[in-house]
Structure formats: C-alpha cells, structure tokens
Amino acid sequence: MVSVQRSGELGYNDANIYIRGISTFTAGLSQPLTLVDGVPRAIANVDPEDIESFSVLKDAAATAVYGVRGANGVILITTKSGRSGKPSYNLRYTEGVTNFTTLPSFADGATYMEMSNEALRTRGNTPQYSDEAIQKTRDGSDPYLYPNVDWFKELFNKKGRMRNANANISGGSEKAVYYVGLAFYDEQGLYNIDELSKYNSSIFQKRYNVTSNLTLQPSPTTTVKLGISGYLNNINLPNTGAGDIFADAYFMTPVQIPTRYPDGKIADVRSGSLSNPWASLTQTGYANQWRSQIFSNLRLTQELPFLLKGLSLTGMFSFDAYNYTSNRYTKTPDTWLATGRDMDGNIVYEQTAIGTEFLNYSKNNIGERTLYSEYALNYNQSFGKHDVSGMLLYNKNDKINTFASNLETSMPYRFQGLAGRATYAYNNRYFLEANFGYNGSENFYPDRRYGFFPSAGLGWVVSEERFYKPIKDYVQFFKIRFSHGIVGNSQIDGRRFAYLATVNSTGTFNFGKNPTNSFTGKEVGEYAVDVTWKLPGKPTSASTSAC
Image (cartoon, rainbow, N blue to C red; front, side):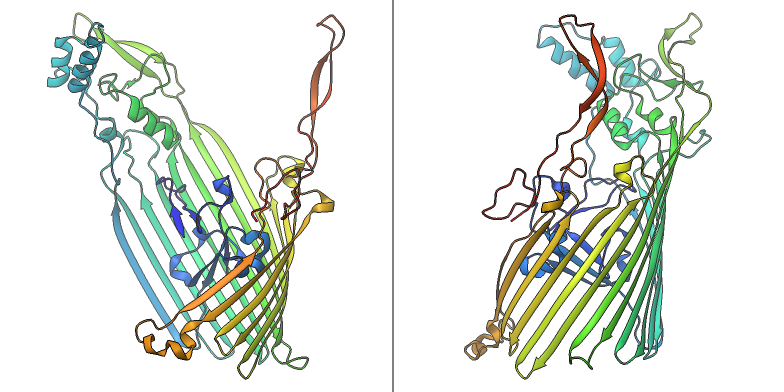
C-alpha cells in the first residue's frame, strides 16, 4: 500500500492511497474502496484513536463481494466498540512543532545582480546593474530604492504548532456495551501575518471529532449495532491561493521591490504576471471555511437456528450528511512603485494599481446526502474437520447533491449490486472459495448496464502438514494462496450518462452564398456513446473496466 501526500496546505493535505500501484490511466480513479464499519467513507474522516482494526484486501477473490467498487482494492476499518465491565477511560494529549521539510536557498540581492551582469556580458550584452546600485543593495543604505528582500523569510515563520487531544470511555454489560470518543486537533500554519491588518489572513485548522458506538443484544440470537459519529472542521487561510503565493516568491527577484514603503504604501511592479507575494498573502483578504459531516449506521443481525443451524440474516442502513461553507472576504490593495527621490530626499511614487478600501464578501456552499443499505443472508457451520460458509448480499447506494445547479447533478449518484460467496475448508489446511459480483452502473447504456464478475481462490497452509514439522520452529506459518477473477471499474472522466447525447441551447448556422445569412438554432454538444463493460472476448465501442 502506497500513500502519497501531494500538498502540505492545511485542509487540502489528504493523502492519495494506492494498493499495488495505479490500475487505470487516470490516477484519481485508482483509489481503493474504504469501508468504515461496512459503509463507504473517506479514510481522512476517521480519528486514528477510534480505529479498532485496519485490513487491506486486493486479490480478486477477496474483493469480489464488493463488486466494481473493489476493483482497486478495499480497505476495511472497524471502529472501537465497548466491552462488558466497568467503565474504562483513556486520555491522550500531544503537542509538537511543524516546519518545512526543505526550502531552496536563494542568492542575496547583490549576488543576483552580479551574476545577472555576468550572464549578460558573456552573451555580448550590456550589464543591467551599475556598480553603485550593486553597492547600495549590498550595504542596505537605501532599502526602498535598492531593496534586498528574502521573500521566503518575509512570508513564512520557521516553526508552526500542532496539538491533539483525545478522550474516550467504554464499558457496558452482557446485553449492552458502549464506546464514546472525543477528539480535538489544532494546527497553526507557517504563514507570517501583518500585525497592522484589521483581519486575520493566517492559516490554521481546528477540527472536532466525536464517535459513538452502541451494541445491544436484546435476545440470544439478535444483535443490534448503532454507530453515530461526525466532525466539525474550521479552516482559515489567505484569499490568494498557496500556489500563487509560492510561485511569486520563487520568481520575484530580491531586487525588484520591497514588501512595503516607510509610509505604509504597498509595493508592486508596474505590469506583468508577478505580484508582490507579501501583499498577496496579507493584503488581499481571507477565507474562512467550515466543513461538517454526520455519519450514522444501524445494523441488525438475526440468527435463524430454527430454520438451519449457522444461518443468519443481516440488514444495515446508513445515512450520512456533509456540508461545506466557504465565507470569502476579498480586497485589492492600492500599490505603488518608487521611481526615485526628490530634491528633499523624499521618495517619488508611481501608483501601479487602484484597489478597494473595504472587504467584499462571497459565499460558496456544497452539500451531500448519502443513503446506503445492504441485506445479506449468511451461513457458517462446521462439520468435524469440514468448515462451510456462504453469503448472498445485495447493496444499494444513493448520493444526492443538495446544492445542485442543474438537472444532471441533481439526480442521485447511484450504484447497486448483488454479490455471493461460498467457501470450504478442510482441517484448517486446504481452502476453496468461489465468488461473484453482479453490478450495475448509471454511466452505461440501460440495456447493458449490468456486468457479471466471477472469481475463485485456492489456499494451502503448508505449515500444517506433517513434513513441515522439522522447520516449524524457524517459520511458524507458511501459506500458499492463488486467486483468479475478473473485476470492473465503471468510473469515467467527464460528464455522467455518457450513453446520452447532449444538445446545446443555441448555435449559429450560415446558409447560401452570402455569409451574412446566419440563423440560430440547436446543435449537438456531445454525441452519445454505446458504452458498457468490456468483458474478455467481447470488445465494445468503449471500455472502462479493468480485467
């Protein structure tokens, strides 16, 4: 399993996880399925203190019961539940410092000017900087007309701070056990701030987590599990994106402009793609984001010994609700460029931009509701040295965009499928299993929406054989496993419902010899594609599955 964190920016630093590499051309569609207590959820939303067990599945037989969702592997996370007995309390507090892993070292202003002149001379050009300008930059006698700025030093602190507090309690009786966990996470970023600014453009994150699990056993054959959890995440950051701030700090030379002038005027260049990175960080406003999510799942397991010993029926329903709100307060500062000094030694300015005095306000909302349900018939029984099990499972998931802007995005994102598994083991030594998944995808043509994905596996625990005993003290467990199967992936880049053609509302058409004879009408936007699963030996016009 490989975990790649592509950003260190608070609130945007979730890791991408890959199991045995990237299996599709689009890396973003190679993420494994993560199930938290049996429900599809993001791994980043789970407090590590609440995790009871963590398992990774990859081979075809192991992931078959998860259907096409498990094509890139499956991560199973089970959160903690209580144990019967007296209440047990756990408290943990950690605090640490953060800093950049590494930063580039830049030349100072005078060295930059000398190297720039040398580069021009070797190419037969006139040097750009005079000896006087280089000397004034080196000695700092006039830092406003001859600046020498270390932009990274102006933008960033050397250290940040993080702290994390966790508390949980668990306990219960034979008929009911409980677990409740609370967590708080606080991290301050590495950005500097302008103490004179009337708002806070620093970057910080405050996150609150709660997890509760309740397990009831109202009868010897009935088990009820209820889990309710959620988080509240508050993030503050500058209005200008981290990518733009870093890019300007990299490419702005140390001698172009100072951060600001002695009378408080903000410095900036006359034109071009670069901006004063210090001003972008501290003078363009800020954004304050709130993310919240509630998770709930209810599972009922009923054993059916009166029908057949080892037979049970399980039903599970889950409701998740996610909400994101971004409040953005933006402004553009007045900027100036010093062009010299007058007879009295005062700086002469040229205004490079006229800004806004007050903050503007905008808001963005995102919301989702997810309904997930599954029903399974299970059988598990032992007959002497023989162990037999079977399962038949149906599941369905609907994700609804609560802030949809058009008909397409307002329709539920749905998947549903049927899965089955049968296993046989002899003397905990020889194993055989067969699985299937029958899954549908909304992206495919209705008559070809469902695909059948079988798999099978064999296992042999060599360490249980008699001939293995002489080396068992050195290698205690040795198992050989083989599995083969077909898995599918229905994720397609771009728009949904690729089997439907789209029509643009307006189009312009010219008729006749006179090009001015134009008419408006409808036109095809995207043509329909007869897309479906690609199965071995059955080529189709479009293929999206991994086989």
